[in-house]
Image (cartoon, rainbow, N blue to C red; front, side, top):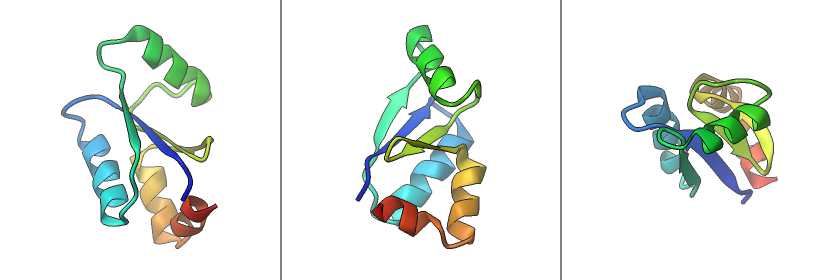
Length: 85
C-alpha cells in the first residue's frame, strides 16, 4: 500500500469526510495539521500546485486533490488501484 499524506485543519468537514473514506478502506495515513504553522501551509500549497484549501491529499507522492477529488476517484473505482500502486 502506498503512503498517504493528508493536509488538514481541525473542524474541517471535508477533511473529516476524506479521512472517513480512507479509514473505511482500512488505509493508514499521515495527517499534517496546517492550521497553526504557516510554513507547513506554504509547503502544502507548493506541493498542491497553488491550491490552498484543505484537505490536500497525496498518495504515493502523487497529488490527488481534495476530498471531492478523492471521492470521485472512489466513485470511478480508481482509488483502490492508486492506493495499491
